[in-house]
Amino acid sequence: MLENNNKNGFLAIDFGGTKVIVALLNLKGEWLAREKKIIAHQDGRKIITETLKLCKKLVSEKQCTISGIGISTIGVVNGDYLKLVPTIKNWDQINLRESFELQFPDVPIYIENDVKAAAYGEILNGALKNTKNGLYLNLGTGVAVGLTYGKRVVKGSHGAAGEVGYLLNSIDSNTSFLNGHAPFEEVAGGQGIARQITQITSVEMEAKEFWNKSFPEESELFQLQKHILELLSFQLSNLCVIWDPEVVAIGGGMEAQYTRFANKLKSALGDNVPFPPKLLPAYYKQDASLNGIAQLLLSKANTSK
Image (cartoon, rainbow, N blue to C red; front, side, top):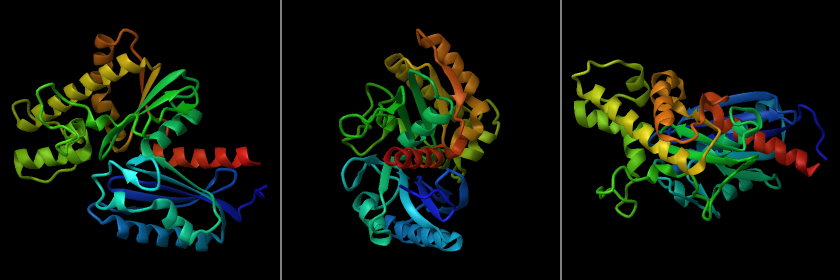
């Protein structure tokens, strides 16, 4: 049994498409320390090296004994190596479990997809609590959903349930997975939005800035905003018809712009879905994945007592 004091703790780590967050919490779930590092355009091996340094720094500063490690990451978690991780170079070549076991031997390690971890946190304490069926929509560097059933998050046969970035945008599109594309994500994901802006204007602009701005109706960027919202409304409506959720919770980096697109999405769900779900911002906002993996750690620890 773990002694519940501030000398024992957990490491919660969230690898996103552009940043990694490392947090330390005690066995009661209280946050002790937290640091963020930007990892955009870096090689996966360098990211691991820098993250392990950050972990050891926090542990040393707080003089903690680590009793468990939870890792939330982009990509499909199925076996020793991740799959479907185009936004981090060589991420599919890294054995995450082995990398952390070498630095933290004999410590239990739990690895979960970031969106599924976020959905788990929303089930326990957030917008999806007490729902029979729920849907967590992550709008960040990429686009994915977590499908929840009671207190479970559906993983699928290969761990890829909810990888909606690969949805087709039209039946005559040649932007298939086989051709190296993630059609929906390339339009509605943060990285894809930034790429489209550059193609239209030759100016670099992040998705967050793009959603925070209002453009003249005759401008191409206004039309791009309109197109993305229409496509997002279309795909989310179809997902809700299939899954019949009580609540759709929106998280990820673009949750900060929730009020900009919430009315459009609510209207589309009301028009297109026989039993429209309630639309809510994620309780854990843009930190849903980190909080989700922390909740998973605490749950595992309590179960093992």
